[in-house]
Image (tube, rainbow, N blue to C red; front, side, top):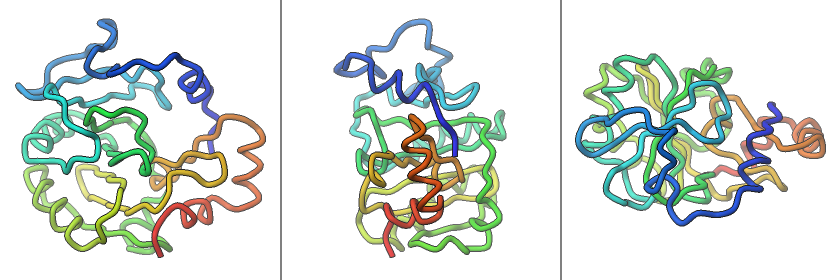
Length: 208
């Protein structure tokens, strides 16, 4: 569990129509191929939190395609980080433009993930290489019910978790929850997680 002051700042910020398309210049990092660019996350939950954004507007609920995974693979080839995708509002997405995220984040749940021991509906596969990501993604999606979902990927494996709701009580859960990091805004939410137990919070927002 982590108390993230950036979450409170993000919630208090005035809304903008498309902040990932009409981004603040100081957040720009680099183009990633011809179809994507990388931005710093204005409200990072960890140091060096990157966004991989589609140049053409596409909705966050849209399936990831080979071009998306080509750009992601190019970044993961240089950065042995965790990549993740919140496919829609119910999966914890806060922006409408399609974007993946990358961060040098720890994955406390990795032993459970790689053993297939998570106590809720999910699909997992090891990766034989970065060029296999799109194929593996489509196979995992095909084995799950049609629903909003979270994707987590490293150089070594991929996980997809279908969602039934965004929140446990007042706590929004995104893909990082399934890596083992639940972010809360205040002590009241921290106490909610402590009383329920982190794994029960995750079970509450996923499918049986």
